[in-house]
Length: 276
Image 1 (cartoon, rainbow, N blue to C red):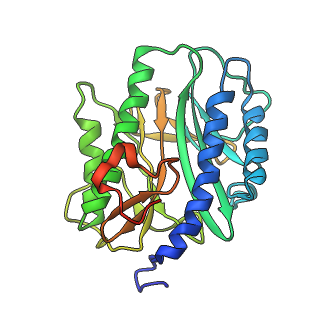
Image 2 (tube, rainbow, N blue to C red; image 1 turned 60 degrees about the vertical axis):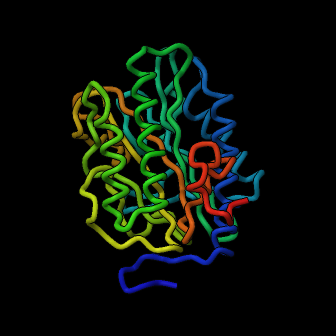
């Protein structure tokens, strides 16, 4: 059903359907971990991803998605180095040793969406690139953990920000982009910022599903748009990392729909008893 604030609240049975889409996305991520290597093009990765999505009974969420720029032409977003999000795969973009790549994947199964992103090293990468990815992943799980007990959406955003700011160096928390609600559409209300104040924002309620989606850089939080209209890069050319999971909220915890184990290893008792 839809509430007056336009947030779609799901039943436990609908979360099970979303889990099916989430597991297709998780399978694609596993394939990406195996495939990412120097000499591989981002178009190669896109072709592997589309094959895995369809083999899993899904439809690519991104392929043909249109926000007024014309239909998106691929099944993944493959953002390399300073590219933050939404980069289009291309045969001409060949991965090199030392690169990092964010791979964002969406799948639809039986009308329900799963959406998640990973950032992977290409071969041996620098210590600061490795740390960038680790910090981004830590903030993702901090936000997910906060979602399990949050009263307001700002509690989730604040937890992500605190996690990023807890490190010795300052990372740029990308401005203007963030997570979102997810369900029968890939992008739904509410918008989930990666920074904010606790106690602010919409009230958290069981039945919500959120795509938690931190994006950070080694430099500025500011971004620039590529001439293709889709690709978003750091304004200063610094490396960027982007990670994401789709998460269901129950009255007794959360279920990470796009994690193979549902989030068990990271969340422990914060995982809902209904996850299986």
